[in-house]
Amino acid sequence: MPIRARLAVTLLPAALLAGTAALAQPAPAPAPRAPAIDAANLAETVRTLASDQFQGRAPGTVGEERTVGYLIGRLQALGLEPAGVDGGWTQPVPLLRTRLGTPTTLQFDRGGKVTPLAFGTDIYVSTLRPDDRAVVDAAPLVFVGYGVSAPERGWDDFKGQDLKGKVAVFLINDPDFAAAPGEPVANSFGGRTMTYYGRWTYKFEEAARRGAVAALIVHDADGVGYGWNVVKSGGGENYDIVRAPDTLTSLALQGWVSGEAAGRLFADAGLDLAALRVAARRKDFKPVDMRTRFQAAIPVEHAVVQSQNVLAKIPGTTRPEEVVMYGAHWDAYGEGPADEQGRIYRAGANDDALGVAGLFEIARNFKAAPAPDRSIVFAFWTAEERGLLGSEAYAAAPLYPLEKTVANLGLDILQTAGRAKDVILVGKGQGTLEDDLARLAAAQGRTVSVESLPERGLFFRADHFSLAKRGVPVLLMMGIAGASDLVDGGKPAGQKWVDDYTGRCYHQACDSWDATWNLAGAVQDISVFYQIGDELARSANWPGWKDGSEFKALRERSAAARQ
Image (cartoon, rainbow, N blue to C red; front, side, top):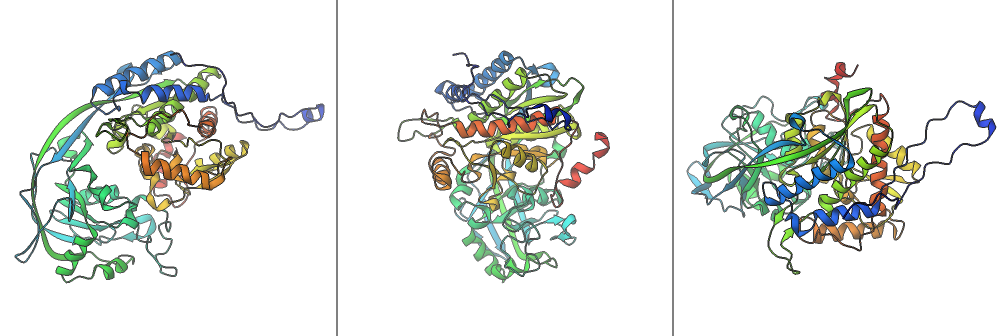
């Protein structure tokens, strides 16, 4: 069915200046360009992508083939140009898929006292190496506290500790996460707002940078934001982009120790875990030899899955080498067990078919407007649900220089409960784009509300982050980050929507197209993202990172390229 181009919901600009007296005054700044985001178009795109025809859009499946073909067809119909490899529409993303088998050895050993570990109960691990067996041969455990190396904050948990061939044991989140008021560390890392140093991905990356053979994080539901059931839900499976042998992680295994098993581990080593948690909140913390070794031998199934990002562009007229990028992920979870209604496809209607639909509408509006000065690239990422891997593959081998990428604006889950009086900001204090968001939301008559659970680290859990950690300024629109102040029902109604979606439908077959969705709020959010990109694409402005952001120094290293 063809997409309708009629105006279903249009956000009007501020009142126009009138009268001859105004002619004598300095020219005012132009009002933000008001896009015509069509809710019916959004609905039709979601209804299509979430249909059984696309089989849940899992990477490397027939569902991917159909999805990629659909995306390219739509982009061609919109009049966009291909922005992929060799003048095509795609960027190949080969993925490594691994799955652990039944361990033949999995234990801690302290001076000959062996403690067997139950996989999925005491410990959960996986691997990102394409080896037939994951082996850790009696490697010593070293407790590294929060495992943070943050020179810009004067913080170093490692103190020169050699981790080569050893197992790094971490606490989750930032050093100030559990700090009491008055402790010297309080608010050194943003308080309850997680920085990247608090993310489990950072811990594993840091352990690998230091040559560790394995990395284990002590599970704490409050610190990570979810229970042990979520940790072990991967079933020993993991994904990564395919890497050259000399760039593979050093970690044979990476994962988690349950809180209960960790308590026994530390106690058996004569260590007080509770006291060490407090000690790890001080700058003078030093790594602790746990006088325990980790032994593991686990068979590994591994294979390469071929997937693709889809990229399109509107070339800039005067500075085409400077790129404003929009992003959404096309993948979902594919086929799974039937739910109570017999649905087997976890089709990600909101996560993230609605984001894809938003990009189509943004692109349609740009094509209806005068050509931009800077190029606008639309990226449809693969394998977000496997660990942000499509965007990571792009950021590792960008088709457009990252130092000339003005910003990345990501759509990933939009609220479907109607118009809101506010917009939810994810990652407060990170970048100057949040100031643009506030200004343009105000032009819509809306305020900005900060995400309700910043300790969950949502800023680090969507595709924009692959570019952020390489210095590109970013902004994320994610409807589940907080309760919207809905026009109909206020924040209680907004919280009810968040709770219902995350409690029932997130990553489940329930995330399907629903004709009762009210997309007026999604239209508001997509509109403000269009306006942010429109301003950037028609100016010479370069957004940046704010003081205190862990990404500011990265961007500043390439400042000469933007002179």
